[in-house]
Image 1: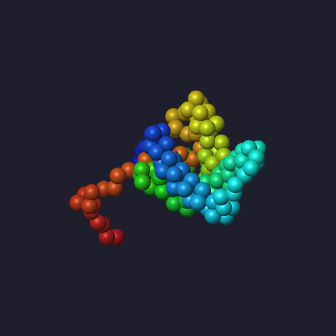
Image 2: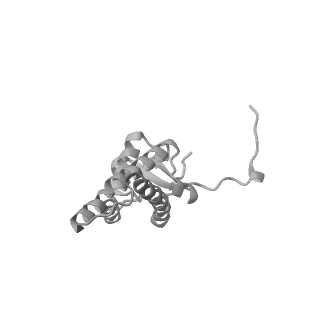
Image 3: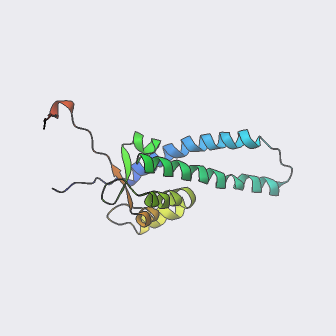
Length: 154
């Protein structure tokens, strides 16, 4: 008996990422402003430095978010809304190592990860860090209609 794995479309993956990005960006920005306040900088160099230092804590928040949710459930909020799931290459629960690698690429090197993934794409629609982590993003099959379900006692 062979099982079928439905690979998620790039567009669905993008919209799931966008939903996650909006949610986490809103939370992380609010948190950073709550912790550091609205500091008024006098020099442009200091302002440039302050704006660019937000990239690291925000990326760490994204990394933790994607790692925890995708390892525990296979789904982030965006993936759950779009009926997608992260799996290993066999369609099963991914390993922690695989999720860490995939989340790292998404959190810190996304443009590089996506562009190279598109250029070097394979039959499994993997980003570079998906390939390195042996992970896939799949479309979850629609559940059966309740009238089609039969129950068997053993």
